[in-house]
Length: 214
Image 1 (spheres, one colour):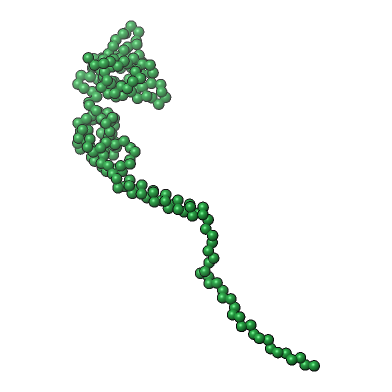
Image 2 (image 1 turned 135 degrees about the vertical axis):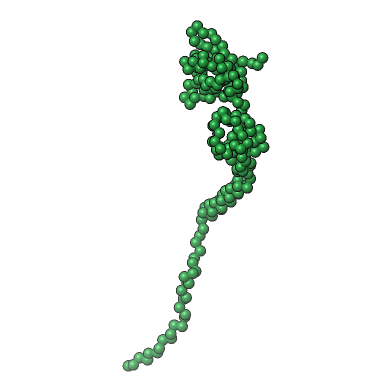
């Protein structure tokens, strides 16, 4: 017996369209990463603002135009004015003080491009009829108080059978040695006393005391 085969109905449901390559599923964003991103943007903006402020707020300061060695008198041609960032941490002198510097004597070497300040300059440390002597004094042989240039002092001999006292004037403030073993300073004395003071200083036989004026 022949079976009556009836054709089945074709499936007319359209196939699912593939997702275009450009369409991606949205990933979940980490709140921590979002916070870090915002913080980076804020810090970047602050840094840019600080840099802009430093570059736009300048100060006019005095600079050396050539090398000047210690003891030389400052000439107007030795100085110039330059503009530097106002936030510069290096010690400088305002351009308004440049006129005061002309005619003063360099207390230390001032290379071209350096910024001179008040402690680098002063009156001529070697007046007429006087000699400049560098001495080293161990702790206990000079006052602990400040001894700025111009301080009147006396140098007392510790040599045997020598109780001489020499009047002197501080030319440069005492500087503590790196090892703490003593202080170095310059003083001026009368030309006649210079040889004996130099000898006593070389043999570590001096004591310095500060005295008042008059």
